[in-house]
Length: 416
Image (tube, rainbow, N blue to C red):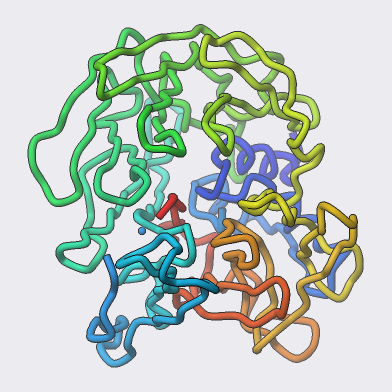
C-alpha cells in the first residue's frame, strides 16, 4: 500500500459526517493538481502524524466571556432573517464564537448548528506491533459557559446539548446517557460490544455500531509504514432510551471495507434510515430500522465532495470548485450552477464541514497569503461562518497551528 493510499484510506476510516471530513485526504492530495493553494507534499513526518490520528480531519455566550488571552469578547452576530421565530438560544439564531481561541473556550454555534463537543487524539502503544488511536473529549457546559474535559472514550452530544451518549471504553459493554450538568449516568447493557454511538437527528434514539475488537488500531510494519487491521464490526444496535428497548441487527463489513478498520453506521438527515460507507468507490449503503437494506433515497447526492453535503432546505450542495480560483464551491440544486467560494476577507476557504442554515455554511479556512497561498501552510486553519450568497465571513475560532499535529482539536457538530 502506498503512502498516499494509506493516508486516504486511514482518514476515510477514521472519519465521517463532521467529526473529520471523510474526503480530507483526497482533497489535500488532489490540491497538488487542481488548486492554487500551496501544494501538499506528503512527507514521512506528516504521514506519520496523520496515521497517528492527529489530523485536520456546542446557552447563550455573553460578551463578558473572553478568548484565550482574556481580552477578546466572544463573537455574537445575528444571522437569521427572522430571529423571533428561528431556533436558538432565547429564540434567536445568533452566531457565537471564540475567534481568538483554538480550541474554543466558549460556545461555537451558528443557525441550527452548534459545536457542543470537540476532541483531540493521540496514538498509543498497544500489544505487539499495534498502535491505537485514543480520543480525549471535551463537552460544553452551559452552566459554566465553557468546554470541560470528560473521562469518556467516546461521546456524542444530543441535539440541544443538554445530554450526551457515552462509552467508557472501546469496545464497550454498555452505553450511557448523561446530562451535561451532572447527575447519575443511565446505562444500557449491550448484547454486543460497542465502538461508536450517535443520537438520531430528533434526539430520541441511539445508533450503536458494534465491534468485537477496538476499531482504531493499526499495525506498525516499520518506519513510516503501517497497515490497517480488518474491521471487527458485527452490526448495529438501535436503542430507544425512553422505552428502554434495543434491537441488534447483524451487519458484517463487505469486501475490504474501503481499507479501514473503523466502519461506523450513521443516520440519514431525517433519521428514517441508517447508512454506511461501502467499497469500492466509497458509495453509501442504506438500511431501514429493521436492519434490511434499502434503496438509495432519490434525493441523496450521487457524489459527496464536501463533508457538509446538502443544505438543510436542499437548495445547495457543498462541492469542490470547478476551476482554479477556489478549492470549494456550492452547487444550486435547481439550476445546476456551481458557485466557487473564492478567497474572502483574508481567508482561503478550504473545507465545507457543516451547514448553519440554508444560506450559511461552516468551513475550515486558512489565512490568505498573497493571492494564491496560505500563511505557514493550509494546515493552519480556523472555523468560519460563510454566507454562500454574498461571501461574507465571521470567524468562529482561532487558528489551529497544525491540524496534522498530534493533539490537534476536531469539532463535533450537532443540531442546536
